[in-house]
Length: 480
Image (cartoon, rainbow, N blue to C red; front, side, top):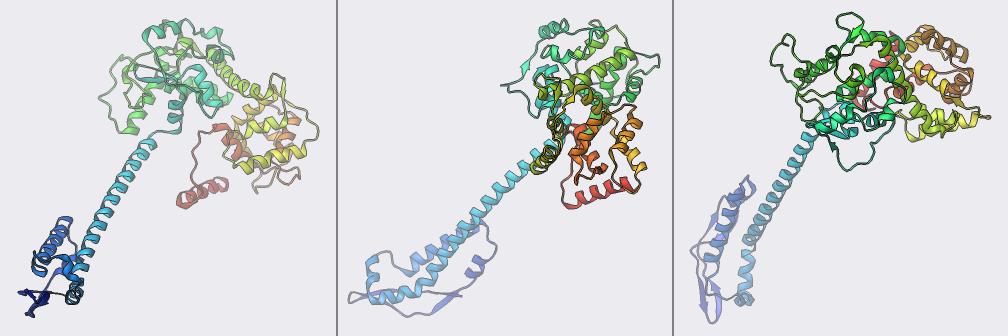
């Protein structure tokens, strides 16, 4: 409790200030009010009331401050110090509370904005983000890649420097039609020859990515997916089924309901949806692939042989681009460059990456080189990696390492092609940890899957519950 003089008077006798002893009363509730949960306005009101009470009852208005220098006044001041301490403490507490509330509000606002941005980013898949990152042109608010953008997206980590995207007009699209060659003139240099003289939509981007990882045994299956009537020919409307499937998937993922059932004879482009990212717009545009497959008028048919040739040419073009990046105009690349190509899309740490290269440098005494044909056959084998993995699990039920001869035989069994002995030897020098001529196929397959997916595969963190579930799921694959 705090004591304050009440009904007391200051008397001025003989030039000294004197205190006339009068009964005192307790000011109850002040301490509890200050320590309790008082709002900002309530705290300010209490402080103002105490100051006024102190000013009117403790000191007369006419009393000068210098009178406190007397001994009597100093004694009385010591009695008033608890009241002053309460006032100062109340003001400091009020200021501290307000500052904390302000900081907490700002922190909460920043955290909320951060969470909203994160939630918005999570909605986009890795392929969607990469398409948006590399697409350099747009038309009617929809993003498109050029043929050069597509090549860059599969072999480069970052797009080429640019100030902004180029906005195309209808006149620009008309001029691009004359740049696109027909299917019969297709080659393994088509995308490099077109460069920026063409457009590729997001749906076609997904289609082209699937081609890069598809084994030749899957070419016929891919064609049959488009051939809805089974006549061994695919027309333009059948090909646009790809866009329809993507449109429905897009609606489902974002909770957008369809307006109704597809009408009889409806233009497939009408099934498109508008989205904020500009990946899918409700308009009909003749892209480079549509012009290449079905001609300028859209009346040509796509047959399996032409479709297969296109897929082979695209795979070869991307592999040539990677190979020539390291060959520097020569017919071969070094064994170390071959290792760099295999490891460039993996999620190895810098120390692990250097360990593989140093191991190969120590073991390869005479450089023989890897030809493009050897490199292409090996990459075709990687497209059959799932079949190879199943064969290895059946062949080595006890998870024993395999020799070079066993590896060579398994590749032949799964792909029908022969890897050169030198290429198999190089692979073993990269991945054989202890140099005993045996390969742990688990580690090899895990790294080669990274290479096959070209950085698009998502990974869980190596900690926490999600990592534990991922580990158990991975181990169960090898047990089953």
